[in-house]
Length: 223
Image (cartoon, rainbow, N blue to C red):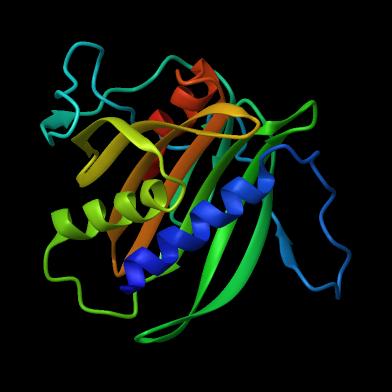
């Protein structure tokens, strides 16, 4: 399993672990999970979010078409991360750090998790991972991360497209999956910049992405 697939696999496992469980408060200092406080940006201080291409410009499922992302309608709360900005209508984020082993050595992934206290099946997350390997092909790296996320939960990819957000080329995708509890959507945006993999995902009940999920993914921008 490649480093990118391993990162995506861990993200998929964490996302599914969140499904159906009520939100929990951040662990106390010294507990097994390491958390650090996330800071919401002062209104108006966050960079203007980027979004997926306008309706009608998406490529047919299974294709990767270039598009220039446009700003989504203003909504949600802006979060100013260390190297990115994103907006969410959910509570959070809770920040978790996890050290993982890869074929190229140990690395630490950081997860910024937004949840709905009233709905354990709804979650939004930005995960960042330093990439301890040389990336030879950006498009293949983005595709590998998407396959890692969707493949390990047996999700069907409904659409995918390459979008330009600011100066960065990113991969957006929409998918859905089912288990014994019902059907769920999973939408995401994947980017690689400065030897860091960014995986932006949102999930919820039903096969069609919610407005909140679309806003979250579309608003993600690198600084």
